[in-house]
Image (cartoon, rainbow, N blue to C red):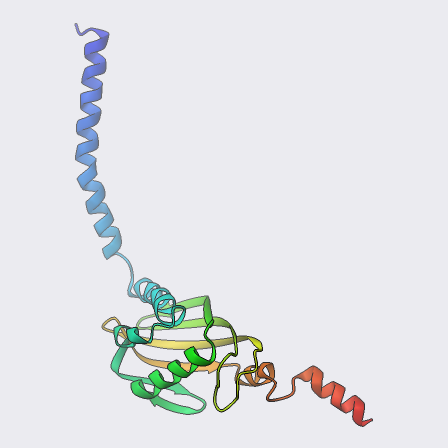
Length: 185
């Protein structure tokens, strides 16, 4: 029969071989897990990376990394192509140098990702003809992105433009209107 030391040695050897055999299986299992990610999961991850790398670092140089050459932005003020959108982004980065976007929700279906977001920033530069006010703003919005071949080809934007103008002091806010009405009475 085997001594206790021989049994322990055999057991340890068996465990080492077992672990070595499982390690490649674990790697293969991980590859399968990565391949099993849905297009929706990959697009949501893309949106998170894009938001951090492009918007939150004000990395205008990365625009071609994330946007297709035939990109189009749809908004209430009309459509913009990639070059027009780049100019708009540059204006945001200059006017709001501490601009930070938080992705509050990401919902994906097929090649589209809906993103509900919140922006916080301080108005420190000229924005749409409005001189810097130093006002801190908090703005919410929703965008629907269409992604093709790993790039954004289209986005539909809806954001609180009235709220921006009120926070910048260009348009009176609700409480200011009430005070004005009280003065008139």
